Image (cartoon, rainbow, N blue to C red; front, top):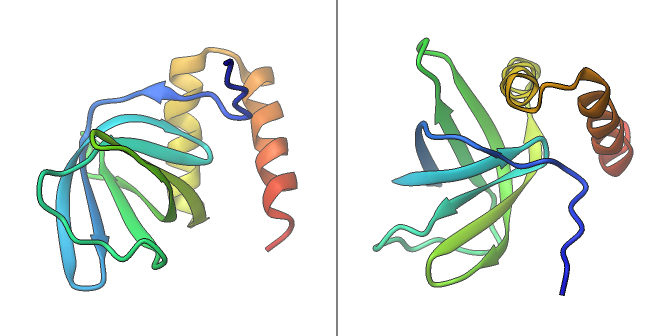
Length: 122
């Protein structure tokens, strides 16, 4: 069975946290794309799957990428979330991070176009 992904995933190691309401959990980031994140499931956490999560990826220069996401899949080891909202500063940082790792502006522009098409003009 092969998987078809619309967005390139970039392996990235950064201090990352997931929060929901008043609860916050540190997580180990596996990869990130323009459309979401994959992280290792924390040993102890109690999320409400229907409620949005806030993902914060802390970068070395004291900036951070922050996105509101929804849970799309979960296994005993991994959690996949899809971005449902991201602010302009965060998407700019995320685009730059992916740009540095993909190495192709044309490829990245195609992904940004796909992202905009998928989300409409919210």
